[in-house]
Length: 240
Image 1 (cartoon, rainbow, N blue to C red):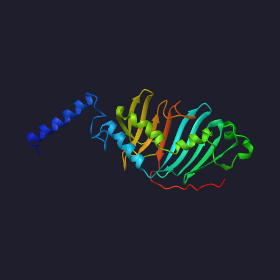
Image 2: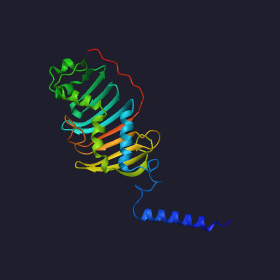
Image 3: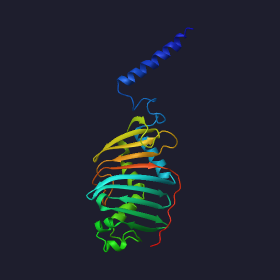
Image 4: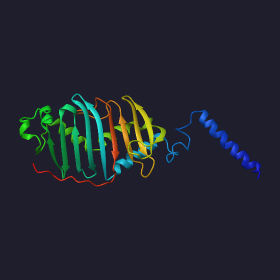
């Protein structure tokens, strides 16, 4: 069956437009079929949606990787919007600390290596015991700062104006995500944003200066993976 001339012309026009888009470098950032479901949004708009959704989540898990003069920093965090939080913080040879915050009370438990690196004496007597951290405990300050997702989201927010949409892929979590990149005075940043369900931020890579103050903050790149949104977790107050 022959198509009407008007239909044939429309089809030819659409094909020509797609070819021109490809030739002019409009893919993948500007072509509607390359960034669905965010085709009608700009890069900054996509990141702002992701920030809003991630901030609004009742709870979230975060895996943080950074660096410090004491070695690689790795933290496993569970936190909710009411302030409840658990953190397991490892700092290479400097040791490991656990932190629980619930009902406004903070308790920490450190191994001997962590206590020695913090110049806490006598380390042997406190190792493995739950204690109330002192104001001078820099490791506890870092761990508690990781309880606040805004530590990382707040650093991304001022950079959204440079956001540019990239390809869609499935990161380590297996959830399809749109990669958005941008640049700042500190360097290049990258964010993976879910393309299925709510537009949660799944992975964030911030350049040098990615977090503020303290060990591992403001001196090296930091990577944060977000997962298990709105899933409850247990944080019982330990007895000292």
